[in-house]
Length: 460
Ligand code: GBH
Image (cartoon, rainbow, N blue to C red; front, side, top):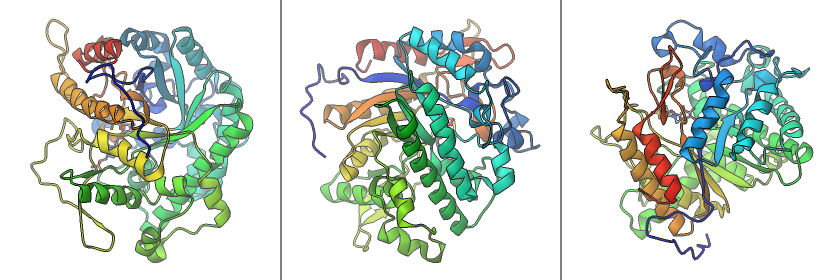
Protein backbone atom coordinates (compact mmCIF):
# COMPACT_ATOMS: atom_id res chain seq x y z
CA UNK A 1 0.00 0.00 0.00
CA UNK A 2 1.40 3.37 -0.98
CA UNK A 3 0.65 5.76 1.83
CA UNK A 4 -0.09 9.18 0.42
CA UNK A 5 1.47 12.12 2.16
CA UNK A 6 -1.72 13.53 3.64
CA UNK A 7 -1.26 16.66 5.66
CA UNK A 8 -4.26 16.96 7.95
CA UNK A 9 -5.41 20.50 8.75
CA UNK A 10 -5.29 19.58 12.41
CA UNK A 11 -4.61 16.46 14.40
CA UNK A 12 -8.31 15.59 14.46
CA UNK A 13 -9.42 16.47 10.92
CA UNK A 14 -10.51 14.25 8.08
CA UNK A 15 -9.32 14.72 4.49
CA UNK A 16 -10.85 17.52 2.43
CA UNK A 17 -13.90 16.28 0.54
CA UNK A 18 -14.42 13.32 2.86
CA UNK A 19 -17.94 11.99 2.30
CA UNK A 20 -20.21 11.93 5.37
CA UNK A 21 -23.46 10.01 5.07
CA UNK A 22 -25.96 7.73 6.71
CA UNK A 23 -27.11 4.25 5.68
CA UNK A 24 -30.38 2.30 5.78
CA UNK A 25 -31.93 -0.70 4.00
CA UNK A 26 -35.27 -1.18 2.26
CA UNK A 27 -36.99 -3.82 4.37
CA UNK A 28 -35.77 -2.26 7.61
CA UNK A 29 -37.36 1.16 7.04
CA UNK A 30 -39.73 1.32 4.07
CA UNK A 31 -42.97 -0.40 5.02
CA UNK A 32 -45.41 0.02 2.14
CA UNK A 33 -45.09 -3.68 1.44
CA UNK A 34 -48.22 -3.84 -0.71
CA UNK A 35 -47.75 -0.60 -2.59
CA UNK A 36 -47.10 -0.04 -6.28
CA UNK A 37 -47.02 -3.70 -7.24
CA UNK A 38 -44.31 -4.94 -4.86
CA UNK A 39 -43.94 -8.73 -4.71
CA UNK A 40 -43.20 -10.72 -1.56
CA UNK A 41 -39.71 -11.26 -0.22
CA UNK A 42 -38.31 -13.97 2.04
CA UNK A 43 -38.42 -11.40 4.83
CA UNK A 44 -42.21 -10.96 4.52
CA UNK A 45 -42.60 -14.71 4.90
CA UNK A 46 -40.06 -15.05 7.67
CA UNK A 47 -41.21 -12.10 9.78
CA UNK A 48 -44.80 -13.38 9.61
CA UNK A 49 -43.75 -16.80 10.89
CA UNK A 50 -44.75 -16.90 14.57
CA UNK A 51 -41.93 -16.69 17.14
CA UNK A 52 -39.17 -15.91 14.63
CA UNK A 53 -38.88 -12.19 15.44
CA UNK A 54 -38.51 -10.57 18.85
CA UNK A 55 -41.93 -9.26 19.89
CA UNK A 56 -43.41 -10.79 16.72
CA UNK A 57 -42.61 -7.56 14.90
CA UNK A 58 -42.46 -7.36 11.11
CA UNK A 59 -41.54 -4.85 8.43
CA UNK A 60 -45.07 -4.22 7.11
CA UNK A 61 -44.84 -0.65 8.33
CA UNK A 62 -41.32 -0.43 9.83
CA UNK A 63 -40.36 3.29 9.89
CA UNK A 64 -42.93 4.11 7.18
CA UNK A 65 -40.16 5.65 5.11
CA UNK A 66 -42.07 4.79 1.91
CA UNK A 67 -44.49 7.57 2.82
CA UNK A 68 -42.17 9.79 4.86
CA UNK A 69 -39.08 9.89 2.67
CA UNK A 70 -39.29 13.67 2.24
CA UNK A 71 -39.25 14.18 5.97
CA UNK A 72 -36.34 11.72 6.23
CA UNK A 73 -34.33 13.50 3.56
CA UNK A 74 -34.84 16.69 5.58
CA UNK A 75 -33.36 14.86 8.59
CA UNK A 76 -30.29 13.95 6.53
CA UNK A 77 -29.96 17.54 5.47
CA UNK A 78 -30.22 18.76 9.06
CA UNK A 79 -27.22 16.56 9.91
CA UNK A 80 -25.21 18.17 7.12
CA UNK A 81 -24.67 14.82 5.38
CA UNK A 82 -23.94 14.95 1.66
CA UNK A 83 -24.47 11.25 0.88
CA UNK A 84 -27.05 8.59 1.63
CA UNK A 85 -26.77 4.82 1.23
CA UNK A 86 -30.14 3.10 0.77
CA UNK A 87 -31.13 -0.23 -0.71
CA UNK A 88 -33.52 -1.12 -3.50
CA UNK A 89 -36.03 -3.87 -2.83
CA UNK A 90 -35.63 -6.44 -5.60
CA UNK A 91 -39.30 -7.61 -5.24
CA UNK A 92 -40.52 -4.08 -5.93
CA UNK A 93 -38.74 -4.19 -9.30
CA UNK A 94 -39.25 -7.86 -10.23
CA UNK A 95 -42.14 -9.16 -8.11
CA UNK A 96 -41.40 -12.74 -9.23
CA UNK A 97 -37.63 -12.36 -9.21
CA UNK A 98 -37.39 -12.86 -12.97
CA UNK A 99 -39.65 -12.24 -15.94
CA UNK A 100 -41.68 -9.10 -16.35
CA UNK A 101 -40.57 -5.99 -14.51
CA UNK A 102 -43.17 -4.17 -12.46
CA UNK A 103 -43.82 -0.93 -14.38
CA UNK A 104 -44.13 0.96 -11.07
CA UNK A 105 -41.19 -0.84 -9.49
CA UNK A 106 -38.75 2.04 -9.51
CA UNK A 107 -41.24 4.87 -8.97
CA UNK A 108 -40.50 5.16 -5.27
CA UNK A 109 -36.73 5.18 -5.83
CA UNK A 110 -37.07 7.79 -8.55
CA UNK A 111 -38.97 10.04 -6.13
CA UNK A 112 -36.38 9.40 -3.41
CA UNK A 113 -33.38 10.03 -5.69
CA UNK A 114 -34.87 13.26 -7.02
CA UNK A 115 -35.56 14.45 -3.49
CA UNK A 116 -32.00 13.61 -2.42
CA UNK A 117 -30.44 15.44 -5.35
CA UNK A 118 -32.69 18.46 -4.81
CA UNK A 119 -31.22 18.62 -1.31
CA UNK A 120 -27.59 18.21 -2.33
CA UNK A 121 -27.33 14.62 -1.10
CA UNK A 122 -25.54 12.06 -3.29
CA UNK A 123 -27.45 8.76 -3.59
CA UNK A 124 -25.47 5.51 -3.09
CA UNK A 125 -27.73 2.57 -3.99
CA UNK A 126 -27.37 -1.01 -2.71
CA UNK A 127 -29.01 -3.64 -4.91
CA UNK A 128 -29.35 -6.42 -2.38
CA UNK A 129 -29.80 -6.02 1.35
CA UNK A 130 -31.28 -9.48 1.98
CA UNK A 131 -34.87 -9.12 0.71
CA UNK A 132 -34.80 -11.90 -1.90
CA UNK A 133 -38.01 -12.32 -3.93
CA UNK A 134 -39.88 -15.20 -2.28
CA UNK A 135 -40.59 -16.64 -5.73
CA UNK A 136 -36.87 -17.36 -6.22
CA UNK A 137 -36.66 -19.12 -2.87
CA UNK A 138 -39.74 -21.20 -3.75
CA UNK A 139 -38.77 -22.03 -7.32
CA UNK A 140 -35.06 -22.73 -6.97
CA UNK A 141 -34.01 -22.57 -3.33
CA UNK A 142 -32.82 -18.97 -3.65
CA UNK A 143 -29.04 -18.63 -3.64
CA UNK A 144 -28.68 -22.42 -3.66
CA UNK A 145 -29.26 -22.07 -7.38
CA UNK A 146 -26.96 -20.59 -9.98
CA UNK A 147 -30.09 -19.21 -11.62
CA UNK A 148 -30.60 -16.81 -8.72
CA UNK A 149 -27.14 -15.37 -9.43
CA UNK A 150 -28.17 -14.92 -13.07
CA UNK A 151 -31.48 -13.33 -12.07
CA UNK A 152 -29.57 -10.93 -9.83
CA UNK A 153 -27.37 -9.90 -12.74
CA UNK A 154 -30.45 -9.22 -14.88
CA UNK A 155 -32.07 -7.18 -12.12
CA UNK A 156 -28.84 -5.19 -11.64
CA UNK A 157 -28.64 -4.37 -15.34
CA UNK A 158 -32.28 -3.30 -15.43
CA UNK A 159 -31.84 -0.98 -12.44
CA UNK A 160 -28.56 0.42 -13.77
CA UNK A 161 -30.14 1.27 -17.14
CA UNK A 162 -32.80 3.33 -15.38
CA UNK A 163 -31.11 4.94 -12.39
CA UNK A 164 -27.45 5.57 -13.22
CA UNK A 165 -28.31 8.82 -14.96
CA UNK A 166 -28.53 10.12 -11.37
CA UNK A 167 -27.00 7.40 -9.17
CA UNK A 168 -23.23 7.45 -9.64
CA UNK A 169 -22.31 4.84 -7.01
CA UNK A 170 -23.78 1.34 -6.71
CA UNK A 171 -23.15 -1.36 -4.12
CA UNK A 172 -24.07 -4.82 -5.36
CA UNK A 173 -24.59 -7.02 -2.29
CA UNK A 174 -24.67 -6.16 1.39
CA UNK A 175 -22.90 -8.45 3.87
CA UNK A 176 -22.87 -11.75 2.03
CA UNK A 177 -21.43 -13.53 5.04
CA UNK A 178 -24.24 -12.43 7.34
CA UNK A 179 -27.20 -13.48 5.23
CA UNK A 180 -25.49 -16.70 4.08
CA UNK A 181 -24.24 -17.94 7.43
CA UNK A 182 -27.30 -16.87 9.43
CA UNK A 183 -29.99 -17.24 6.76
CA UNK A 184 -28.85 -20.54 5.24
CA UNK A 185 -26.56 -21.85 7.99
CA UNK A 186 -26.82 -22.46 11.72
CA UNK A 187 -25.38 -19.17 12.98
CA UNK A 188 -25.87 -17.91 16.55
CA UNK A 189 -28.80 -15.84 15.27
CA UNK A 190 -31.26 -16.72 12.55
CA UNK A 191 -32.17 -14.69 9.49
CA UNK A 192 -34.51 -15.44 6.55
CA UNK A 193 -35.04 -17.92 5.02
CA UNK A 194 -34.15 -19.69 8.28
CA UNK A 195 -32.50 -22.83 6.84
CA UNK A 196 -29.71 -24.85 8.45
CA UNK A 197 -27.73 -26.26 5.55
CA UNK A 198 -24.46 -28.19 5.53
CA UNK A 199 -21.05 -26.56 5.12
CA UNK A 200 -20.75 -27.89 1.58
CA UNK A 201 -24.04 -26.29 0.57
CA UNK A 202 -23.07 -23.04 2.31
CA UNK A 203 -19.81 -22.89 0.37
CA UNK A 204 -21.74 -23.47 -2.84
CA UNK A 205 -24.20 -20.71 -1.91
CA UNK A 206 -21.30 -18.34 -1.16
CA UNK A 207 -19.90 -19.10 -4.59
CA UNK A 208 -23.27 -18.32 -6.20
CA UNK A 209 -23.54 -15.07 -4.29
CA UNK A 210 -20.03 -14.05 -5.39
CA UNK A 211 -21.02 -14.96 -8.93
CA UNK A 212 -24.20 -12.90 -8.61
CA UNK A 213 -22.03 -9.98 -7.53
CA UNK A 214 -19.73 -10.43 -10.55
CA UNK A 215 -22.62 -10.76 -13.00
CA UNK A 216 -24.12 -7.59 -11.52
CA UNK A 217 -20.83 -5.71 -11.95
CA UNK A 218 -20.73 -6.74 -15.61
CA UNK A 219 -24.38 -5.87 -16.18
CA UNK A 220 -23.95 -2.44 -14.58
CA UNK A 221 -20.90 -1.77 -16.79
CA UNK A 222 -22.87 -2.88 -19.85
CA UNK A 223 -26.16 -1.11 -19.14
CA UNK A 224 -25.32 1.75 -16.77
CA UNK A 225 -24.02 5.17 -17.61
CA UNK A 226 -20.29 5.20 -18.42
CA UNK A 227 -18.35 6.14 -15.33
CA UNK A 228 -20.78 4.56 -12.88
CA UNK A 229 -18.78 3.41 -9.86
CA UNK A 230 -19.47 -0.14 -8.63
CA UNK A 231 -18.48 -1.91 -5.45
CA UNK A 232 -19.82 -4.09 -2.68
CA UNK A 233 -20.48 -3.70 1.04
CA UNK A 234 -19.08 -6.51 3.12
CA UNK A 235 -19.01 -7.36 6.79
CA UNK A 236 -15.30 -8.00 6.36
CA UNK A 237 -13.84 -10.41 8.89
CA UNK A 238 -11.77 -7.80 10.69
CA UNK A 239 -8.50 -9.12 12.08
CA UNK A 240 -6.86 -6.84 14.62
CA UNK A 241 -3.35 -7.35 16.00
CA UNK A 242 -3.80 -7.98 19.72
CA UNK A 243 -0.62 -6.02 20.44
CA UNK A 244 0.74 -3.84 17.65
CA UNK A 245 4.10 -5.50 17.08
CA UNK A 246 5.48 -5.98 13.57
CA UNK A 247 4.95 -9.78 13.83
CA UNK A 248 1.35 -9.48 14.97
CA UNK A 249 0.60 -6.86 12.32
CA UNK A 250 1.93 -9.20 9.65
CA UNK A 251 -0.16 -12.02 11.15
CA UNK A 252 -3.27 -9.80 10.99
CA UNK A 253 -2.64 -9.22 7.27
CA UNK A 254 -2.37 -12.96 6.58
CA UNK A 255 -5.47 -13.58 8.68
CA UNK A 256 -7.38 -10.89 6.77
CA UNK A 257 -6.70 -12.75 3.53
CA UNK A 258 -7.51 -16.23 4.83
CA UNK A 259 -10.51 -15.38 7.01
CA UNK A 260 -12.17 -13.68 4.03
CA UNK A 261 -11.14 -16.37 1.54
CA UNK A 262 -14.66 -17.59 0.71
CA UNK A 263 -15.83 -14.24 -0.65
CA UNK A 264 -13.82 -11.00 -0.52
CA UNK A 265 -10.50 -12.65 -1.30
CA UNK A 266 -12.04 -14.57 -4.21
CA UNK A 267 -13.55 -11.36 -5.57
CA UNK A 268 -10.34 -9.33 -5.23
CA UNK A 269 -7.91 -12.06 -6.36
CA UNK A 270 -9.96 -14.20 -8.74
CA UNK A 271 -9.17 -17.40 -6.89
CA UNK A 272 -9.88 -19.40 -3.78
CA UNK A 273 -6.76 -19.60 -1.62
CA UNK A 274 -4.94 -22.93 -1.27
CA UNK A 275 -5.56 -22.93 2.47
CA UNK A 276 -9.29 -22.34 1.93
CA UNK A 277 -9.58 -25.22 -0.55
CA UNK A 278 -7.48 -27.53 1.63
CA UNK A 279 -9.54 -26.72 4.72
CA UNK A 280 -12.86 -27.08 2.87
CA UNK A 281 -11.78 -30.42 1.40
CA UNK A 282 -14.79 -32.25 0.00
CA UNK A 283 -16.99 -29.32 1.10
CA UNK A 284 -15.26 -26.95 -1.31
CA UNK A 285 -17.53 -25.21 -3.82
CA UNK A 286 -17.73 -26.50 -7.37
CA UNK A 287 -16.54 -23.77 -9.72
CA UNK A 288 -15.11 -23.11 -13.16
CA UNK A 289 -12.26 -20.83 -14.25
CA UNK A 290 -14.80 -18.82 -16.23
CA UNK A 291 -16.86 -18.23 -13.07
CA UNK A 292 -13.81 -17.04 -11.15
CA UNK A 293 -13.18 -14.52 -13.92
CA UNK A 294 -16.72 -13.17 -13.59
CA UNK A 295 -16.46 -13.08 -9.79
CA UNK A 296 -13.29 -11.02 -9.96
CA UNK A 297 -14.58 -8.44 -12.47
CA UNK A 298 -12.75 -5.24 -11.50
CA UNK A 299 -14.60 -3.02 -9.04
CA UNK A 300 -14.13 0.66 -8.22
CA UNK A 301 -14.36 0.59 -4.45
CA UNK A 302 -14.76 -1.73 -1.49
CA UNK A 303 -17.37 -0.94 1.16
CA UNK A 304 -16.65 -2.20 4.66
CA UNK A 305 -19.34 -2.57 7.30
CA UNK A 306 -17.42 -2.30 10.53
CA UNK A 307 -19.07 -2.75 13.89
CA UNK A 308 -16.51 -4.66 15.90
CA UNK A 309 -13.27 -6.62 15.80
CA UNK A 310 -14.11 -10.11 14.58
CA UNK A 311 -10.78 -11.47 15.77
CA UNK A 312 -7.75 -10.35 17.71
CA UNK A 313 -4.72 -11.96 16.14
CA UNK A 314 -1.18 -12.82 17.14
CA UNK A 315 1.75 -14.30 15.22
CA UNK A 316 2.11 -18.07 15.36
CA UNK A 317 4.50 -20.85 14.38
CA UNK A 318 1.55 -22.73 12.93
CA UNK A 319 2.01 -23.10 9.15
CA UNK A 320 -0.82 -20.65 8.48
CA UNK A 321 1.16 -17.93 10.30
CA UNK A 322 -1.47 -16.53 12.62
CA UNK A 323 -3.47 -17.41 15.66
CA UNK A 324 -6.99 -16.21 16.53
CA UNK A 325 -7.22 -15.42 20.21
CA UNK A 326 -10.26 -16.47 22.26
CA UNK A 327 -12.41 -13.66 23.66
CA UNK A 328 -12.68 -13.42 27.43
CA UNK A 329 -16.29 -13.56 28.63
CA UNK A 330 -15.77 -10.13 30.23
CA UNK A 331 -15.07 -8.46 26.87
CA UNK A 332 -17.35 -5.37 26.77
CA UNK A 333 -20.25 -4.96 24.36
CA UNK A 334 -22.92 -2.41 23.49
CA UNK A 335 -26.70 -2.87 23.86
CA UNK A 336 -26.66 -5.70 21.29
CA UNK A 337 -24.84 -8.65 22.89
CA UNK A 338 -22.83 -9.31 19.73
CA UNK A 339 -21.60 -5.73 19.38
CA UNK A 340 -18.14 -5.84 20.95
CA UNK A 341 -16.46 -2.54 21.67
CA UNK A 342 -13.17 -2.55 19.79
CA UNK A 343 -12.69 0.81 18.06
CA UNK A 344 -9.30 -0.20 16.65
CA UNK A 345 -11.16 -2.44 14.16
CA UNK A 346 -12.00 0.83 12.40
CA UNK A 347 -8.30 1.39 11.80
CA UNK A 348 -7.14 -2.14 11.08
CA UNK A 349 -9.92 -3.33 8.77
CA UNK A 350 -9.47 -0.62 6.10
CA UNK A 351 -5.71 -0.54 6.65
CA UNK A 352 -5.38 -4.28 6.05
CA UNK A 353 -7.78 -4.35 3.10
CA UNK A 354 -5.77 -1.55 1.44
CA UNK A 355 -2.48 -3.25 2.27
CA UNK A 356 -3.33 -6.84 1.33
CA UNK A 357 -5.13 -6.11 -1.97
CA UNK A 358 -3.85 -2.65 -2.84
CA UNK A 359 -7.44 -1.37 -2.85
CA UNK A 360 -7.49 2.26 -3.95
CA UNK A 361 -10.88 3.36 -2.66
CA UNK A 362 -12.71 2.27 0.46
CA UNK A 363 -15.97 3.42 1.99
CA UNK A 364 -17.02 2.61 5.50
CA UNK A 365 -20.45 1.52 4.30
CA UNK A 366 -21.82 0.98 7.82
CA UNK A 367 -20.83 1.67 11.39
CA UNK A 368 -23.00 2.40 14.40
CA UNK A 369 -24.50 0.93 17.52
CA UNK A 370 -27.71 0.02 19.24
CA UNK A 371 -28.48 1.68 22.55
CA UNK A 372 -31.29 1.50 25.11
CA UNK A 373 -32.53 4.94 24.11
CA UNK A 374 -35.14 6.46 26.44
CA UNK A 375 -37.19 9.54 25.73
CA UNK A 376 -36.92 11.69 28.87
CA UNK A 377 -39.87 13.62 30.30
CA UNK A 378 -38.65 16.76 28.53
CA UNK A 379 -38.44 14.91 25.19
CA UNK A 380 -34.64 14.62 25.02
CA UNK A 381 -32.77 11.38 24.25
CA UNK A 382 -29.34 11.46 25.84
CA UNK A 383 -27.56 8.57 24.13
CA UNK A 384 -24.11 9.09 25.62
CA UNK A 385 -23.16 5.48 24.96
CA UNK A 386 -23.70 5.93 21.21
CA UNK A 387 -21.61 9.12 21.25
CA UNK A 388 -18.86 7.32 23.17
CA UNK A 389 -18.90 4.49 20.64
CA UNK A 390 -18.88 6.78 17.59
CA UNK A 391 -16.18 9.08 18.94
CA UNK A 392 -13.84 6.17 19.61
CA UNK A 393 -14.44 4.43 16.27
CA UNK A 394 -14.11 7.71 14.37
CA UNK A 395 -10.87 8.49 16.19
CA UNK A 396 -9.50 5.26 14.75
CA UNK A 397 -10.87 6.14 11.31
CA UNK A 398 -9.10 9.49 11.53
CA UNK A 399 -5.93 7.63 12.43
CA UNK A 400 -6.34 5.64 9.21
CA UNK A 401 -7.08 8.60 6.91
CA UNK A 402 -4.25 10.66 8.40
CA UNK A 403 -1.86 7.84 7.45
CA UNK A 404 -3.18 7.80 3.90
CA UNK A 405 -5.39 4.71 4.06
CA UNK A 406 -7.70 5.47 1.12
CA UNK A 407 -11.06 5.78 2.88
CA UNK A 408 -13.22 8.20 0.90
CA UNK A 409 -16.29 8.31 3.11
CA UNK A 410 -18.27 7.02 6.06
CA UNK A 411 -21.94 6.00 6.30
CA UNK A 412 -23.36 5.99 9.79
CA UNK A 413 -25.79 3.15 10.53
CA UNK A 414 -28.37 4.36 10.87
CA UNK A 415 -30.35 7.49 10.06
CA UNK A 416 -33.47 6.39 11.93
CA UNK A 417 -34.52 3.58 14.25
CA UNK A 418 -35.71 0.64 12.16
CA UNK A 419 -36.71 -3.01 11.99
CA UNK A 420 -33.57 -4.75 13.26
CA UNK A 421 -34.20 -8.16 11.64
CA UNK A 422 -34.67 -10.91 14.25
CA UNK A 423 -34.36 -8.36 17.04
CA UNK A 424 -37.55 -6.72 15.75
CA UNK A 425 -38.07 -3.14 16.89
CA UNK A 426 -36.19 -3.70 20.12
CA UNK A 427 -32.65 -2.71 19.17
CA UNK A 428 -32.50 0.92 18.11
CA UNK A 429 -29.62 2.04 15.86
CA UNK A 430 -30.85 5.48 14.71
CA UNK A 431 -29.44 8.96 15.18
CA UNK A 432 -33.13 9.85 15.17
CA UNK A 433 -35.53 8.08 17.48
CA UNK A 434 -38.70 6.71 15.89
CA UNK A 435 -41.90 6.25 17.88
CA UNK A 436 -43.26 3.24 16.00
CA UNK A 437 -46.86 4.05 17.05
CA UNK A 438 -46.94 7.65 15.83
CA UNK A 439 -43.89 7.49 13.50
CA UNK A 440 -42.62 10.69 15.12
CA UNK A 441 -38.89 11.28 14.58
CA UNK A 442 -36.86 12.92 17.38
CA UNK A 443 -33.13 13.68 17.20
CA UNK A 444 -30.98 11.95 19.79
CA UNK A 445 -27.97 13.75 21.25
CA UNK A 446 -25.80 11.67 18.89
CA UNK A 447 -27.44 13.46 15.92
CA UNK A 448 -26.01 16.71 17.30
CA UNK A 449 -22.62 15.02 17.82
CA UNK A 450 -22.59 13.86 14.19
CA UNK A 451 -23.75 17.28 12.94
CA UNK A 452 -20.91 19.03 14.78
CA UNK A 453 -18.36 16.54 13.50
CA UNK A 454 -19.50 16.94 9.90
CA UNK A 455 -19.56 20.75 10.14
CA UNK A 456 -15.95 20.76 11.40
CA UNK A 457 -14.82 17.76 9.29
CA UNK A 458 -13.01 16.86 12.48
CA UNK A 459 -13.62 15.00 15.71
CA UNK A 460 -15.56 16.88 18.35
C1 GBH B 1 -25.50 -4.96 9.76
O1 GBH B 1 -25.10 -6.20 10.19
C2 GBH B 1 -26.59 -5.04 8.73
O2 GBH B 1 -26.08 -4.76 7.43
C3 GBH B 1 -27.76 -4.14 9.03
O3 GBH B 1 -28.85 -4.50 8.24
C4 GBH B 1 -28.07 -4.19 10.50
O4 GBH B 1 -29.24 -3.48 10.83
C5 GBH B 1 -26.90 -3.59 11.24
O5 GBH B 1 -25.71 -4.20 10.88
C6 GBH B 1 -27.02 -3.66 12.75
O6 GBH B 1 -27.05 -4.96 13.21
O7 GBH B 1 -22.51 -13.78 14.99
O8 GBH B 1 -22.47 -12.88 17.17
O9 GBH B 1 -22.03 -11.46 15.31
C7 GBH B 1 -24.13 -6.16 11.24
C8 GBH B 1 -23.36 -7.42 11.43
C9 GBH B 1 -23.48 -9.73 11.74
C10 GBH B 1 -24.41 -8.29 13.39
C11 GBH B 1 -24.21 -10.88 12.38
C12 GBH B 1 -25.11 -9.44 14.03
C13 GBH B 1 -25.02 -11.82 14.39
C14 GBH B 1 -24.50 -12.21 15.73
N1 GBH B 1 -24.16 -8.49 11.99
N2 GBH B 1 -24.37 -10.65 13.80
S1 GBH B 1 -22.80 -12.61 15.78
